[in-house]
Length: 76
Image: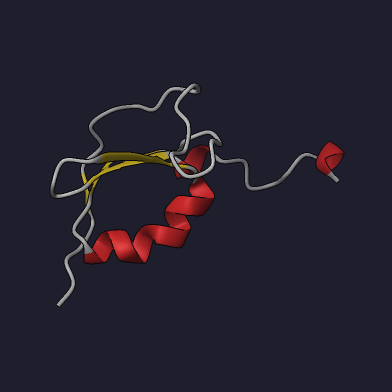
């Protein structure tokens, strides 16, 4: 039986908050049952979300809706 991620937006992330995995802008923050807070970029949060659900992390902020779904033409 796996636990569900509890989404309780507690804070807003700042543009200066960075992913603990890669250093990109953070769009999510979780807190483990032990109290460890982690910041996630959209990519890494999506990648690790199943493990976070399994380990009962609390989502304190999820601002992935702010990620631009259409990359800039200059990015090509």
